[in-house]
Image 1: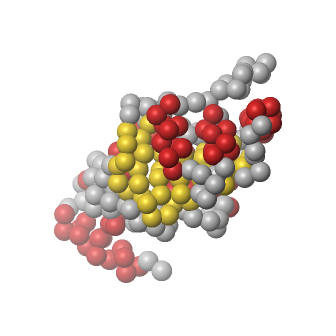
Image 2: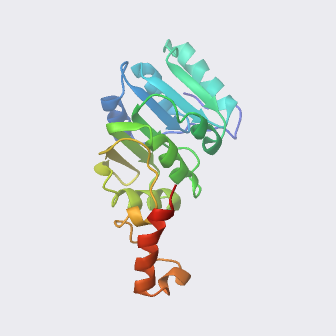
Length: 210
Protein backbone atom coordinates (compact mmCIF):
# COMPACT_ATOMS: atom_id res chain seq x y z
CA UNK A 1 0.00 0.00 0.00
CA UNK A 2 1.07 3.55 -0.58
CA UNK A 3 0.59 6.18 2.08
CA UNK A 4 -2.11 8.70 1.34
CA UNK A 5 -2.20 12.41 2.00
CA UNK A 6 -3.43 12.01 5.59
CA UNK A 7 -0.31 12.29 7.79
CA UNK A 8 -2.13 10.70 10.74
CA UNK A 9 -2.64 7.37 8.96
CA UNK A 10 0.50 5.34 8.36
CA UNK A 11 1.22 1.91 6.96
CA UNK A 12 1.21 -0.49 9.87
CA UNK A 13 3.42 -3.52 9.35
CA UNK A 14 5.53 -6.10 11.12
CA UNK A 15 8.40 -8.34 9.99
CA UNK A 16 8.28 -10.71 7.03
CA UNK A 17 8.75 -13.79 9.19
CA UNK A 18 5.63 -12.89 11.14
CA UNK A 19 3.62 -12.69 7.92
CA UNK A 20 4.97 -16.10 6.93
CA UNK A 21 3.75 -17.52 10.23
CA UNK A 22 0.31 -15.95 9.71
CA UNK A 23 0.17 -17.51 6.25
CA UNK A 24 0.96 -20.93 7.74
CA UNK A 25 -2.09 -20.83 9.96
CA UNK A 26 -4.66 -18.85 7.92
CA UNK A 27 -6.63 -19.95 4.88
CA UNK A 28 -10.14 -20.34 3.45
CA UNK A 29 -11.21 -22.79 6.16
CA UNK A 30 -10.00 -20.69 9.11
CA UNK A 31 -11.53 -18.05 11.35
CA UNK A 32 -9.06 -15.31 12.28
CA UNK A 33 -9.19 -12.03 14.19
CA UNK A 34 -6.83 -9.12 14.68
CA UNK A 35 -6.84 -5.95 16.72
CA UNK A 36 -5.33 -3.16 14.68
CA UNK A 37 -5.14 -3.05 10.90
CA UNK A 38 -2.53 -2.84 8.18
CA UNK A 39 -0.58 -5.10 5.85
CA UNK A 40 -1.69 -8.12 7.90
CA UNK A 41 -5.33 -7.31 7.10
CA UNK A 42 -4.60 -7.43 3.38
CA UNK A 43 -2.75 -10.72 3.86
CA UNK A 44 -5.67 -12.34 5.70
CA UNK A 45 -8.01 -11.23 2.90
CA UNK A 46 -5.66 -12.55 0.21
CA UNK A 47 -5.45 -15.88 2.03
CA UNK A 48 -9.24 -16.14 2.04
CA UNK A 49 -9.52 -16.41 5.82
CA UNK A 50 -12.85 -15.55 7.41
CA UNK A 51 -11.24 -12.59 9.06
CA UNK A 52 -12.42 -9.96 11.53
CA UNK A 53 -10.38 -6.78 11.86
CA UNK A 54 -11.06 -4.58 14.89
CA UNK A 55 -9.89 -1.02 14.29
CA UNK A 56 -11.07 2.33 15.68
CA UNK A 57 -10.60 4.15 12.37
CA UNK A 58 -13.07 3.84 9.50
CA UNK A 59 -10.49 5.62 7.35
CA UNK A 60 -8.08 2.69 7.80
CA UNK A 61 -10.76 0.21 6.77
CA UNK A 62 -11.62 2.30 3.70
CA UNK A 63 -7.99 2.49 2.61
CA UNK A 64 -7.52 -1.27 2.98
CA UNK A 65 -10.70 -2.01 1.01
CA UNK A 66 -9.63 0.45 -1.67
CA UNK A 67 -6.19 -1.12 -1.94
CA UNK A 68 -7.64 -4.62 -2.17
CA UNK A 69 -10.03 -3.48 -4.90
CA UNK A 70 -7.12 -2.02 -6.89
CA UNK A 71 -5.15 -5.27 -6.57
CA UNK A 72 -8.07 -7.60 -7.25
CA UNK A 73 -8.04 -9.09 -3.74
CA UNK A 74 -11.39 -10.55 -2.72
CA UNK A 75 -12.64 -9.00 0.54
CA UNK A 76 -15.92 -10.92 0.80
CA UNK A 77 -14.60 -12.86 3.80
CA UNK A 78 -13.19 -9.73 5.49
CA UNK A 79 -15.25 -7.96 8.17
CA UNK A 80 -14.31 -4.69 9.83
CA UNK A 81 -15.55 -3.92 13.33
CA UNK A 82 -15.06 -0.22 13.87
CA UNK A 83 -14.38 0.81 17.44
CA UNK A 84 -11.92 0.41 20.27
CA UNK A 85 -11.20 -3.23 21.01
CA UNK A 86 -12.24 -2.96 24.66
CA UNK A 87 -15.73 -1.98 23.43
CA UNK A 88 -15.91 -4.28 20.40
CA UNK A 89 -14.45 -7.60 21.60
CA UNK A 90 -16.89 -8.22 24.47
CA UNK A 91 -19.86 -8.07 22.10
CA UNK A 92 -18.12 -10.46 19.70
CA UNK A 93 -17.49 -13.02 22.44
CA UNK A 94 -20.23 -15.34 21.21
CA UNK A 95 -18.68 -15.74 17.77
CA UNK A 96 -17.11 -18.89 16.31
CA UNK A 97 -13.92 -20.41 17.68
CA UNK A 98 -10.82 -18.81 16.26
CA UNK A 99 -7.83 -20.47 14.63
CA UNK A 100 -5.57 -17.44 14.96
CA UNK A 101 -5.57 -14.15 16.84
CA UNK A 102 -3.18 -11.27 16.12
CA UNK A 103 -2.91 -8.63 18.86
CA UNK A 104 -1.49 -5.49 17.29
CA UNK A 105 -3.86 -2.67 18.19
CA UNK A 106 -3.62 -0.24 21.10
CA UNK A 107 -0.37 -1.07 22.91
CA UNK A 108 -1.07 0.98 26.02
CA UNK A 109 -1.69 -0.77 29.34
CA UNK A 110 -4.02 -2.63 29.85
CA UNK A 111 -5.38 -2.97 26.29
CA UNK A 112 -3.14 -5.87 25.16
CA UNK A 113 -4.33 -7.81 28.23
CA UNK A 114 -7.97 -7.05 27.41
CA UNK A 115 -7.44 -8.12 23.79
CA UNK A 116 -5.84 -11.35 25.00
CA UNK A 117 -8.64 -12.00 27.48
CA UNK A 118 -11.55 -11.52 25.08
CA UNK A 119 -10.06 -12.71 21.79
CA UNK A 120 -7.86 -15.38 23.37
CA UNK A 121 -10.90 -16.90 25.07
CA UNK A 122 -12.26 -17.72 21.61
CA UNK A 123 -9.07 -19.45 20.48
CA UNK A 124 -9.59 -23.15 19.85
CA UNK A 125 -7.24 -25.73 21.27
CA UNK A 126 -4.01 -25.55 19.22
CA UNK A 127 -5.02 -22.13 17.90
CA UNK A 128 -2.25 -19.54 17.52
CA UNK A 129 -1.94 -16.25 19.40
CA UNK A 130 0.47 -13.66 17.96
CA UNK A 131 1.56 -10.46 19.70
CA UNK A 132 3.44 -7.78 17.82
CA UNK A 133 5.73 -5.05 19.20
CA UNK A 134 6.72 -7.11 22.24
CA UNK A 135 9.38 -4.58 23.27
CA UNK A 136 6.66 -2.18 24.38
CA UNK A 137 6.02 -2.34 28.15
CA UNK A 138 2.42 -3.57 28.21
CA UNK A 139 3.03 -6.17 25.50
CA UNK A 140 6.23 -7.33 27.19
CA UNK A 141 4.27 -7.77 30.41
CA UNK A 142 1.66 -9.83 28.55
CA UNK A 143 4.41 -12.05 27.13
CA UNK A 144 5.95 -12.51 30.58
CA UNK A 145 2.59 -13.78 31.81
CA UNK A 146 2.06 -16.06 28.80
CA UNK A 147 5.54 -17.53 29.22
CA UNK A 148 4.34 -18.90 32.58
CA UNK A 149 0.71 -19.65 31.75
CA UNK A 150 0.24 -23.43 31.25
CA UNK A 151 -2.76 -22.74 29.01
CA UNK A 152 -0.35 -21.49 26.34
CA UNK A 153 2.86 -22.88 24.90
CA UNK A 154 5.56 -20.74 23.31
CA UNK A 155 5.71 -21.33 19.57
CA UNK A 156 8.07 -18.77 18.02
CA UNK A 157 9.62 -15.46 19.01
CA UNK A 158 11.81 -12.74 17.57
CA UNK A 159 12.85 -9.39 18.95
CA UNK A 160 9.65 -7.87 17.54
CA UNK A 161 6.87 -10.47 17.86
CA UNK A 162 5.94 -13.65 19.68
CA UNK A 163 3.57 -16.53 18.94
CA UNK A 164 1.91 -18.93 21.38
CA UNK A 165 -0.19 -22.06 20.87
CA UNK A 166 -3.35 -22.46 22.93
CA UNK A 167 -3.07 -25.69 24.92
CA UNK A 168 -6.62 -25.53 26.30
CA UNK A 169 -9.90 -24.04 25.14
CA UNK A 170 -12.72 -22.04 26.65
CA UNK A 171 -12.73 -18.75 28.50
CA UNK A 172 -9.60 -17.48 30.23
CA UNK A 173 -11.27 -16.34 33.44
CA UNK A 174 -9.28 -17.24 36.56
CA UNK A 175 -8.96 -15.94 40.10
CA UNK A 176 -5.57 -15.26 41.64
CA UNK A 177 -5.49 -18.55 43.56
CA UNK A 178 -5.88 -20.42 40.26
CA UNK A 179 -2.62 -18.91 38.99
CA UNK A 180 0.20 -20.32 41.13
CA UNK A 181 2.47 -19.90 38.12
CA UNK A 182 2.14 -16.11 38.31
CA UNK A 183 4.70 -14.86 40.80
CA UNK A 184 4.90 -11.14 40.12
CA UNK A 185 5.76 -9.04 43.20
CA UNK A 186 2.70 -8.60 45.40
CA UNK A 187 1.49 -5.10 46.39
CA UNK A 188 3.04 -3.98 49.66
CA UNK A 189 -0.19 -4.40 51.61
CA UNK A 190 -0.61 -8.01 50.48
CA UNK A 191 3.06 -8.79 51.06
CA UNK A 192 2.63 -7.77 54.67
CA UNK A 193 -0.14 -10.33 55.28
CA UNK A 194 1.24 -13.24 57.36
CA UNK A 195 1.50 -16.59 55.60
CA UNK A 196 -1.20 -18.18 57.79
CA UNK A 197 -3.67 -15.41 56.92
CA UNK A 198 -2.91 -15.76 53.20
CA UNK A 199 -3.55 -19.50 53.37
CA UNK A 200 -6.88 -18.81 55.08
CA UNK A 201 -7.83 -16.36 52.32
CA UNK A 202 -6.92 -18.95 49.73
CA UNK A 203 -9.09 -21.58 51.45
CA UNK A 204 -12.13 -19.39 52.01
CA UNK A 205 -12.34 -17.33 48.82
CA UNK A 206 -13.28 -20.20 46.48
CA UNK A 207 -16.20 -21.12 48.72
CA UNK A 208 -17.60 -17.61 48.34
CA UNK A 209 -17.63 -17.68 44.57
CA UNK A 210 -21.11 -18.07 43.02
